[in-house]
Length: 229
Length: 229
Image: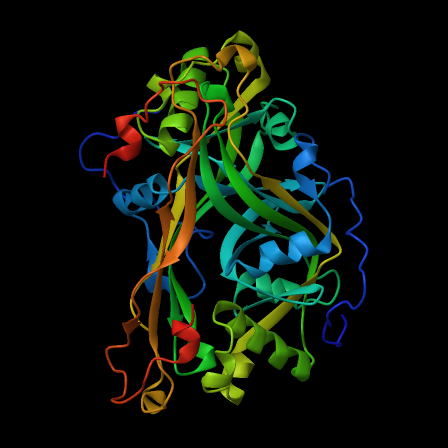
């Protein structure tokens, strides 16, 4: 377990090294290993799906995450099962973290070529509990700021009781790949004249009107970081 | 392996039976086992995250799915690794399928109580390849119609070559739970007067302007099922 906070890579960084499990068996042209692509996909997401093995069976749970440099941080209750497992120094928690953005529904003339446009990142590795207090603070701030940049400075920091109840785990970005599909349908040439509409229905998340807490203290204004374009 | 297509349950259906792995260790009040809640969450999604175990390590991949009655269907190339594994009759592919909707960012006065509003379903079980041709056709139509209702009837059906290249796997809805968080932040009473804005930023997917395929045949109109509200 490393107690050193991850730092941003400086200078030109080599891409992630492909491995047997990060090279897809199909559509290899959709795979990307450069850090810029991977980081952009991760940073645009709030939620990841954390996979781990319990009693020999896979478990996939949605959870918040944040990237700091070449590490992902996840957190949860010290009582949660995967976080307890990650706290065992050896072997830690073999984990797979996947982040996916759905960008469009791809309608082809043929049922077979229907698809989606998406950007995903899959990270394989071993998650380990973070015990260094400075790194824990950095990770917890990052988790809040990843959801709303600037927010950690505009909220009450965790107190000792809350810190004691929170486990932080770290998964280093070593064995990583992105997969991206863009563009229109890839119909077979002999299907192009069929009378079925073909194209893409774009999909993107949008933000609705802010809903203030029912018990919001009078006079508390909406902060700029929530209204800036 | 069953060759009988799953059918809708008729009459009042019992909730899914909670098991050790579908009862959360925390926030148990967020767990739901009724079929109506589970089905609604599944049917509103296009993408699931499929978890399986390879060489002892977890793998989580995004993929399309469709629900038909009390079964989930997934498909892919016959060459893909998890689908090949599911094709082995015994033991099939131990799998976990998770579907998550992000509904809002929950900003609390305290960093600790930041959260998200979400609806998720986790399905545990063993995925098995579907070999019955009628059930395969039903599943493939459902996969297209799940993305755009009515679309399978308005596209060229799969031909023999395409069918031969496509594996369909089925995961029955037996060991299933939903988890739902709604509402505003749950700050501690002593934090309510703090000068930090608190509330929810709603998030929802929206659909953009249709992008016709560059090679769309002249005169092909946008179908009603893509423009209906």
